[in-house]
Image (tube, rainbow, N blue to C red):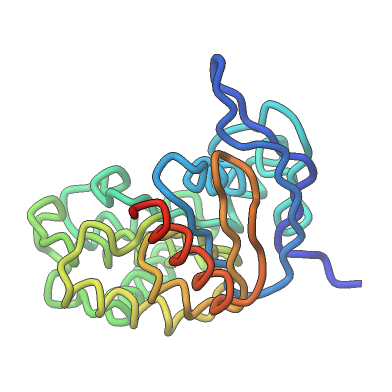
Length: 232
């Protein structure tokens, strides 16, 4: 039997008096999972649980067969995370150095690491910016750099938290096309419903609870109708 990409059993996160994620159970075997919901619904917290960035208050988590917190080293080698704000993960002065930084613990030789960085620069259209100051890039370029720095490690699963939120329409379209071209397993947390429509499966959270799950079209249509009713 194939190991599911993600398994959650009654996962709950409580902070103070607030339940942020409420008894979520989920088994994911699809290559692309979309996560939608209103602000404060628990989407980003759920992504951080899957990525091993935070521990649940209760419940069990398995990602690629691993507990992402207890098996942290092994999980980090196989899971990549792109934050909504790319400045949160850009740490080195130049584009090339930032991508190379992700390989600092790699067993690859210096030459192999350099080749891998060059491949990432080409893959994400960043070759001309290789020696540019990373923090002076445009928002779209920073998002591409964050993605390149994540994928240069060749993770099996990539979690993208609001990858188009800070981008204008043109850059959002380019980022969507880039994400569409990826072959890795993906979890996409987004308010960009057109982006999420490209997933094989979509789940919806409301006040931390899993309230819908299925093919993208029907789940997104129900979400749109509910949001329209809430505004009226």
